[in-house]
Image (cartoon, rainbow, N blue to C red; front, side):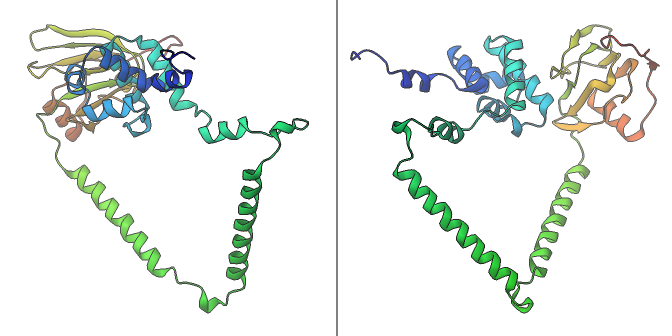
Length: 287
């Protein structure tokens, strides 16, 4: 190997690992900071960091992981379809761990003297046997120990119950806190849904078919914003990052439904009727 030749292991180590690494490399290649991408995509910096680290399980849900990754791919110039497929694959299929791969590479094959078990395997077998014997000893001791010597679980159970009640109180306190009516209103598609958002003057803010994970934020300066869609049941809504009820849980056509934070919160409190027309059930794609 010449002095200028790069070892193959070093080349492998320098390549981005996983779809998160590819997104990070693409962002850095375009000279974009996390703050710049967060401002452009309206995705929080914390969520972008988790996606680039491949920690999709830390996101609010699968829909958000797919949608945010699609938006990031668009922002850094990667193919959206390829990125979405890779994200779904990483979430659905867990690859073999490095420990398992190492064990597979060192599997003993009969008739191959060069791969016969070495000293390390012998010492590991001795250690495993010792652990097994210790486990048997303590199991037998617990089995034959007089009932009076068994530790009481009353105190532990009380502590666990107290922790459970504290968690419940914290959850109830969060749900009872009022939602900020000045927060951003964000629609997230849970499937394919056609939408049209307009303002009070009838100007169309956006009209498109949203795919799973796509998001749309109502502009802060839009007055009297409304929505027309045939799949309100596939549109999740958040206000200031807090979940609010969907416009409808049914497959139906809704028209000119106000979507300002104030209007959506009022709907949640009073559950008024909407301008809805039941959509016909078909075997084709949703409108």
